[in-house]
Image (cartoon, rainbow over all chains, first blue to last red; front, side):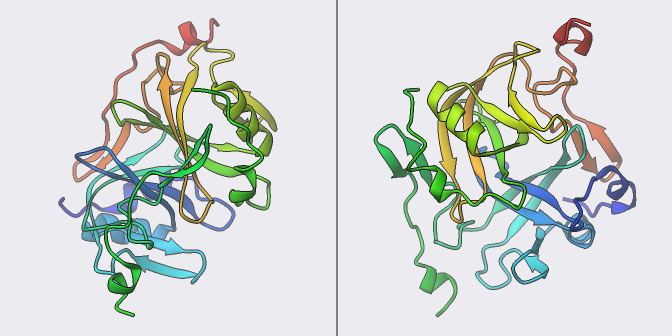
Length: 132
Length: 132
């Protein structure tokens, strides 16, 4: 995806009191919802500029370039804003797995009548992912 | 979907300081991401019990039974929790349109190199939707 100037985009976003907006990552071709994380203005600008998805890590308090440790990057295919500008939908091409548990998606636990059920398997061991 | 007892589910969810957790609604068969809204414990319990999606409206400060005014209900097909329990993915069957603007999805504005671009059309006029 070509670099996009964020100066026209940022004023359309409603950041919360912490300066963050939630961003949903969806695999662009299969439609699978991979994860939800947060972005600040700087991570939005970097993502649009570079075409590699960069979040804001609330636990680390800094930019989180997805895949910088694990190698499992997200290439931006499309960047969508919702009707009231307070949520982003990132259509991405995910390298490998999105979840730190080694599963393709973070949404692998389903609430079913029979109880909580795992619906996605571990594809890569977290030790391998993070070279522990 | 059969009624699900929420007592085993609620302890797995990490509600924020306002007692809310973000919930992504995805059309179960097409994979389209329709909207993102918030749920509190009561709306989670009601959604699992009834199979009709109920959010918590931050603007109104109360339960928001999706479609109660517009008729555009969401029937629950699956209820997924992410790896750290702070986001819900609702697989739903959406009656009509999800967005209050009369579009199928709230994510109809794309950031493209040529500028902000509308990528979904109005299917129902909001006046018709809300019988103004």
